[in-house]
Image (cartoon, rainbow, N blue to C red):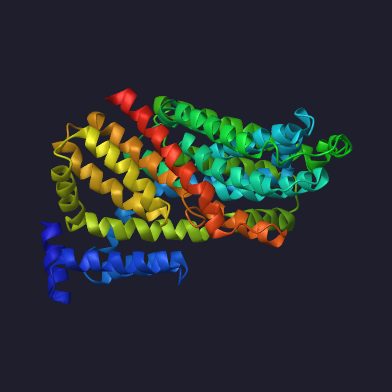
Length: 448
């Protein structure tokens, strides 16, 4: 009755079918988002407010549409990473890894790719490349080799590695929260695919670049002389950060047995680390530290997610997504196999050209509406994993496919090693197609 009342309200205010109004709001918002003419948080919040002003949603419904578990998970992990990186631990691992392979250029290619992928599984991709890229420039400069192949592989590794876990990439956070999937669900289903994909991509890079990345023994010795321990700027903070990180990951792993949401675990971990970080400081210093760390949180992304949830909820409430779901069911002849293959490839292609966050946020309620007609949640799991894999792997398709790509390109430009859009495609398209093909084979063998 309430939905019918709101539909009548929207019809009364706009003189149009509520479905048309909601769809128009979403289309306009997404077009502006994809054009990048305005800040994405501003666009999402304006769109959310228009959903309310139009009568599509009430304010109470709009708040109900926001997934606060996702918001909490993002804020918590951003806070933990913001504090942890001040210890220098991430730079230490990269330098330590380079020295373990005796600064051999080919070994370095493998080490930096693996480190990037592993960090991306637990940190956000942008933070990972911001930490690893400067170390890459430092080491390749000492070795007098071109950083280009290393930077390319780090871009691909950040997007592939982030696919492996619940917290590695925003699409997975959205899926995990919406479907109630655990940390280990993602690890069991996606990590094997990520490992095989990374191995194939690294092997391809090694074959192509092994004769081009050569250095002298003297320059390798220079890298071996770097004191990795100097990267650790605060040993006490390092111990505190590692303790909290391990506890939070352990919490994620056991969350399904504890019946505690991942967002709560992340926020608790952030609060504990903030306490440890500021313990013993004076009142003014403590407040300054807390404000500084909270300033590191990407509030643009947080408000973008909040507004996006409301916009998509407006589509859901008016029945637009259910209607699209029914059309998709007819298109795939109610075949889970056809739906899985169509979703993974469509997601990958679209995510290489547009932001995968609004795409996944829209697809989740649409696919949910299909579950009753397609055999239920358990039967639909390959489709859900296909959405995750396609959206995350698709970020490698173009230079604008993921934020990490743009960040690395900007840093490379400043260092005098520009990554051009068309030249990037020579690697990105084969990498994206190969990774999605590997994922498709895995899903087919496991489920069909």
